[in-house]
Structure formats: C-alpha cells, structure tokens
Image (cartoon, rainbow, N blue to C red; front, top):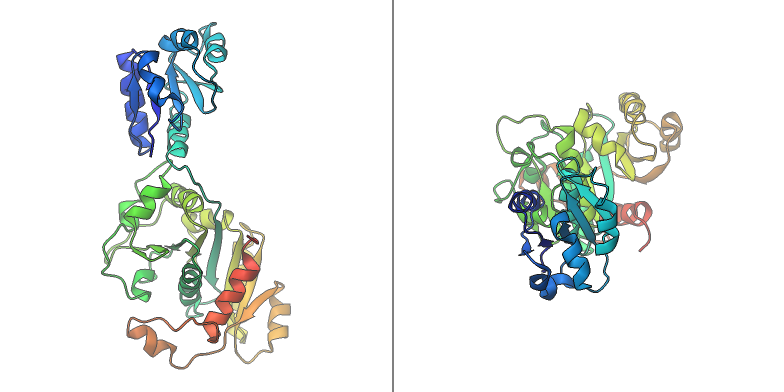
Amino acid sequence: MHRPLVITEDPALLDDLVRIAAAAGAQLDVAHVPAHARPYWSLAPIVAVGADQADTVAAAEPPARDQVVLVTRDPDDPDTWRKCVAVGAQTVVALPVDERLLVDRFADAMEPDPRSGSVICVIGGRGGAGASVLAACLALRASADRLRTLLVDADPLGGGIDALLGHEETPGARWGDLVAREGRINAGALQAALPAFGDLAVLSFHRGDVAAIPPQAMRSVLEAGTRGFDLVVVDLPRHLDPAGTEALTRARTTVMVATADVRGILSAAQVLSEIGKHTADIRAVLRPGAIDHEVALSSLGIPSVGNLPDQPRLTATLNRGELPRLGPRTVLGSLCTSLLHDLLPAS
C-alpha cells in the first residue's frame, strides 16, 4: 500500500505531520523539495504540501490530482488561499486547530476500500430472553454467508459474548484495550487486533473486573466497524448506559427479543419505552408463552421479524461451549437468514 506524501522543508511542521500521521496509523513518504516528490505524487493516497513549499510545487507543474491539502501554521496569512489554488489543493489545513481533521484525512487515505456496514442492535425484553444467543447466531450466520461481520459485546456484566461462542481463551484485543481510545480508530487495525474466526471478528470483555465503556470509545469502534465490515451486530444490556445509547443512535435496526407472557410483555414494554428515545426502527422477535403472538405484538406496538420457538437442548449445547447449528433447515439458522434478508440493504 502506498503511503501519504508530505512535501515540506520546515522541520517543526514535519515533526507535527509525522505525529499526526502516527495517530492515524500511517507512515509518510517525505520530500523536502518537489523534485524528490515526483515518483510519489500520483501514487500517494493523499498529498500534504507545506505552505513553505507551495510556490515551488506550483512552479514544478505536477499533474492535477485530488486529495491534495495545503498545511499551514498561519491561517491568517493573506497569501494562503492563493497558494492553495496554485498548488491544486482542495482544502487548507491550519495547525493546530485542524489537527483532528488531518488525522481523519490520513486515516481515510489508509483505508482505500471502505465499506458501508450496517449496525444492528439486539436487546432482551427481559433477562434470559435469549438476546445474546440471537446476536451471536446472527453474526455467525452473516459471516458464514461471507459478510465481513463484527460482533460487539456492549454488556459489561453479561459474562462475555466470547464465552458464549466458546472462544474466551482466544488471544486478541478486548474492551479493556480500547476504552482509552478517543477519536478515530483505523478499521484495518481494529480488524487485525480483535479475535477473529473466518469473516467474524469479536469485541468482548476481559474476565474479572470490568469498567463501563466510554461512549466515545463505542463511537470510535462503531465508526471503524461500519468502514471495515459489512455488518456490525451489537449485543446491548437491558439497562442502558451511555455506550449502549451511543450504539442505539447508530443502529439501522434494533431487534428486541420478547417472551409472550404477562411479565415478559410488561418488561419488554418498559425496555421499549426507553430505547425508543434513542432509535426509531425497533422490531420484535417473539419467544412462545401464554399470550397469543398477535396479542403480544399488539401490546408492544412494533412489527415482528420472526418467532423463536423454545429449544429444549439449547442450554446443554451452550454449556458445552457450542452454539446451535445454523443450517438453513434449523430454526435458528432459518430465523437468522430471514433477519439478514429483511434488515440489511439489498446488495
């Protein structure tokens, strides 16, 4: 992969640009004069021209291209915009004010094939409804269909969705390694850091004491997830924290797993009133109970996207560190296939 190109003779400016590039997970090709930049000019994903070299670069008449920025420390210089036009730059970046903008531009340049993944949140209408199992199975089914999928555990007290998958010992980053992150996370770096099984990557919690996820960390992960994956499935806690709220606001659809009995529907209605403050598209997957499904759905007032019958041997299967089979003829497999078809945009 080609690297961003910087053209400057200003040592202080170069030091800042190297630091900014490192924050974006990028290394630079550096040219102190335009002649040295010629081999890289057309190949670099982005070119940052220091204001000190703008006129010299313009005099060299390099081929026109996009993704050129003029970097200056003096935005009030009346000559800045003339230099911007002369060098063929599309924008001016003034340091230090626009440092975060330049981090994002460098990070974008290092992700040449960004995806446009969808976020689907899954939440239980009450404890034990099976939301985590459905979230895990949905992610597994999607990855089996060759969708690059990220499964995000957003419940610090849920016991770890990696344990549900039977891979709690698999090495890789957990939330504890990411909670201090602010700003952009490179999608490729995130994918490389997480435990992965084929096309499925998993972000869960370490064993032992856990800390709440800062909302800015959830925001960074989901933004990287939608750039680097086709689908991001978030397993939410019923008692929303700021990170769960952050995920809800970014969800294309939220699936609530509700049991069709009196307490199940009453509990689901309370959960629904809370999550409805943060997201619009909420749909139900119903578990069987004493209440007729149509009556249950009418009580909740949201559309159904499927039913999930009881599976007597499911608990034993999970306790062995296994997940149920997800073939097209199985109940869970058929439900997950139907959900993916209904909830994801047509390709």
